[in-house]
Length: 81
Image (cartoon, rainbow, N blue to C red; front, top):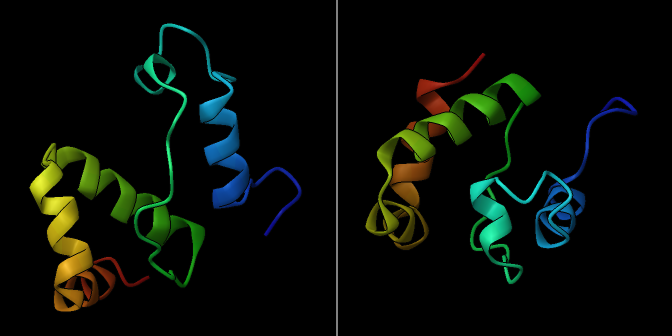
């Protein structure tokens, strides 16, 4: 990981501190917590999976990712570099 890349924990802390600006969606609350971790092979794979999850715009989809590991496996395969 390059020096400009933040860890998940660092990004979460920045969101909770409204570092990214008060007009951003994540600034509307400061109690964000890590719900699921997906181990990716590259930063590009991680960004693609994150974008995919955000496009779903579904709390239930995210809950299902945690409940059904095969969903995560399919995402990893779909966005495999």
